[in-house]
Image (tube, rainbow, N blue to C red; front, side, top):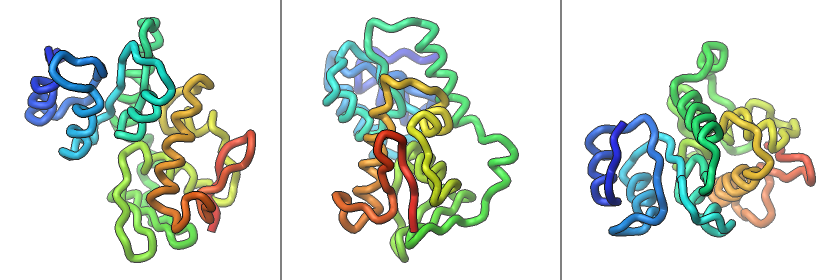
Length: 203
């Protein structure tokens, strides 16, 4: 485990050591944790990032998730809960079960095509840049194309846990998928909301 005293040291360590997981505080002595997160993702870091902070406002959570955080835990927190979330994130990135890993054939829904073997997505002929969790969320929906998938199912499959308090996690990532995949994100054709239940990916 490597502990960084400030944002600059953390960025340097993450770039040189490629960590399995980053636990990031938002209130760093030299710069905002949001800025560190943005630089990590723009620099190509694909490892999961868990924000651990005293800032519990919804706008902070939404901003962190939109910048590429995979989870958001507010202080005070239970140690067992934190360890469970860390374990869930590590399980998600340590390799999918063999039965899922074998499913490498391209999946096409409407004009969206996913290539599980390379973790890439196209909309028509255009390559779409998705963050890791956005891709996993889209893949979970694509594997059930046409069927309704509940928020609880998505939280369990994509994030590794079911936590109603963090159901906004799913909603925030869905909004990002729509922004990147829909011609008009305010009137989506593919990533559809099923009110009070979850989401459905449609042709």
